[in-house]
Image (cartoon, rainbow, N blue to C red; front, side, top):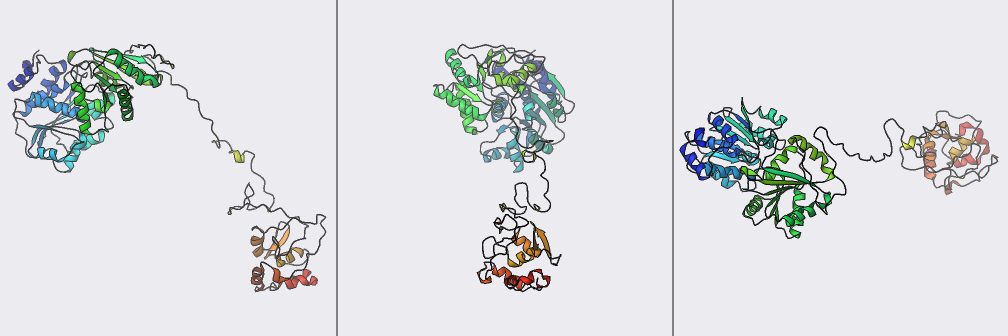
Length: 559
């Protein structure tokens, strides 16, 4: 089959001939007629099989006869996940449409937006864009979709992944309902297929090869190695084999930067390319890698999508990807357009789960090759296609403290019984509830009456002692209570018992009651308290005078 049999126009056939293409690839042979008929298409093909030409050629053919785009309008929109892929698709549009009078441009982030807005004012027939910058332009009323005829999602699996799904839905909400939808990608997972069918309508599904398989022109294997020896092994392979152009994949941006520093320390010219780099730095790195001035290009998965380098000889997976489908994309950077390519992976024992997932996806065990001097101390476990590898057991840390269903360490002995009413208000450590002070007062004897006066530290007020000594006399039950074996008034109990003014230990262990020495009220340190109490009714006006009259001790009327 030739391109002439696909119904393409003469200017397109002439542009194809200038690129030395004579026969279409399988994906092109099936996709081009379906797109020319105006049908929605979902096409899956391996990387490097010519998917870009499979939708650019028929789009150029369809837009040739239509009305030109008005100011700030576009007729065909091609969305790509990365800036590099957007630039590559724009280059394909320019190459194949060189003989046509159609306008095209590319917009993406990382550069100034004003020049892009100026280009859109003239009207664009084919616009290649990344989702983020497209939404920025639409928010500033720099682009309109009233004339939109065709929507293309290139690398559709990544476009519809969780990182892009919200932007895609916002874009779909502002596009006209009547349009042609085209989705091209190297892989389609089951979840992505379900989501894609909500965008396309009665699509023509094209799959020219088994799903999630590697290209036959790519030979791939792995080198078991310890994680700390990966960088040294990569340097050894580059220097030993004389590799002049190597694309290395790193799982993280930080890992890519760190690896570049190690390569440069070994006199290997390398450059990183990832999302944290500016667009100018990414463009310089990719251009230097293509012209040979940069020997090793270290890239992450997102940045590497769409990197198209003719006859790239070597691809190295420094880290295995977490998503198995990304392995197919990675090794598909080599062996393009029918040329032979080589892809190798440096795998440590910690990546056995990712390795097993990749092998189940591609339905083959990846050959293992050991390198002398880099044999792993921690051997890479064997993998099988029919079952998952056992996950390594991780020793659990001993738990301390309270567990559900068990008592905590503080209450392991059970609750301490209440000792009557004496310890009321104290917690387990002897600390009173509601106060941050800890009581260290020795518990006074019930029979001890050898109390110091209120003028000495720790002494009780005279009226409190007087009432505690009135054991057999009448008293007012509403104003007195027993605390620690002593009769005190309710008003004095909180200040003298709950406070820190504890009585000293009794010096009369025999229990003989002895009268405390007479003291003058002028030496009292808390005379203010008693003077305030003396103003109250009930005989509390002169406690010191009551002490001097022993006959009044049994007379409740003086209280």
